[in-house]
Image 1 (cartoon, rainbow, N blue to C red):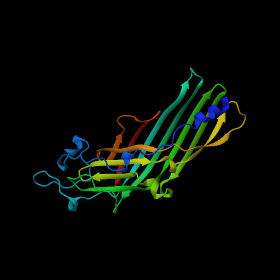
Image 2: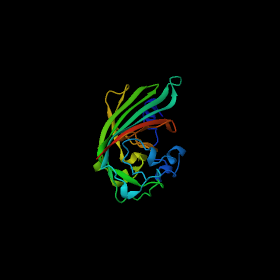
Image 3: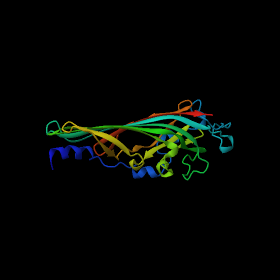
Image 4: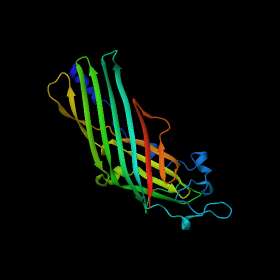
Length: 251
């Protein structure tokens, strides 16, 4: 293999990302003791909550009014490296960012079972918004340097239903929530421009490893918003991911 080909191989060496298998089913009920012990009597202000009976226990579906929708954004960043780095003269680094602007609306016929056993809950699915992909990759070899840069925006309404099956939100009547943010890279293909220091012209190159892997998260609403961030980096192979999200309720 020539040195020129080695640089190109490094650029395309990252595996296709998929949502991990455990993201196909909701996390076990009562996954965290803190959320399991929360009741409507100590729900945060602004939660779309159930009423409270005289003994402090939560009322159920008949007295629960769910928000009409949630709107907001999430951001996922990825850092990765491969090869031996400067010492060997061969290596590659990659930076990916996925920004999602989502409109969540109630799912009246959700296929997912409700997971808050003590209070009622409402599922939401994305019905509007967009996903924007930003990619920057750089590979070095003894022949020189190659870079790939790409940017593309996908409309949520134009993605096939299969692409959205791991994007959903469950909000309990007492303000707890469980959020799923996952999408396999198959649905987010990007074409980058590749430029190499040892070639006079640039060329198009496909990138097929941009997925959404924030996966299952849970927490408690802050006022009228669902706000959170990954506590620890999500690591797959040589790649490390972090994410944050904020969705505000709209009545």
